[in-house]
Length: 360
Image (cartoon, rainbow, N blue to C red; front, side, top):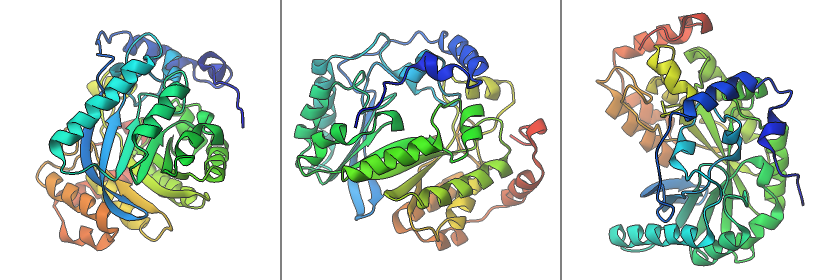
């Protein structure tokens, strides 16, 4: 199935995103970092809970030409675009060099190859201006002996033909989609992302027709939402995603303060606080009854720029979240408590959009 190539300038027109994009363009212009085209942005080994159980996982963030939407300004929360090569598509040879660097990293640290491989970019793995078709085929061949592969993409680029590079080799494949929220208004006005929920539903159907599963990334507490609004939106989003056929996993990503983003500008002027870790546990407890695997990995937990509580209990709460990810048992949260829960409860009840944030 063919779809028109998205154009950042056309996507911007008539969507009320001009002010966001002008602000983001000015912020991103401050970035002067340079990156090696032959090395991945990041690579690490970890454990993941999947529909087949817990498995070892190799995660690779490829260094590509970046997210096309960022050309028009991009998302308010994201600094990943500053970690990508400036100036278009990275060559096939350089991308394969990044894969080899990642495999060398794995060989040095693991006794045997991880069963699952997750491939991310600053934009979309299935965007052929980031990852050419020949590179996609070569990567699929390289990892053909693994149990499962996960690729990240916006709905725009998800079609059966692009997924066949993996499915034709018998690989189990999931497509991870950064939906952020099921509420279009929040996604547009708070995140500045042009995706519509209807587009996500179409992409999920396309992936399902190709024999691929869908993993959804949701964002807890984008800018301009109070703590209580963010929790309510996340619970609503998880439940609605669970009803989308083919969506088997939801990854709740608590917002953190990334460099060269609108969130960082707000944070530096005391206009934004990352979500409380108690908010993460509240959502996980409230949605544990849904027919979908719900996990969360709070990046930067315990730091001022990441999801945090009072500082005294952050590590204990983070361990409980990680335990929940593996066991899917909400009773793990009964084992952690702290006096700061009372402060969090007051914030959740009293914070309003015109007085953000109520606490630091």
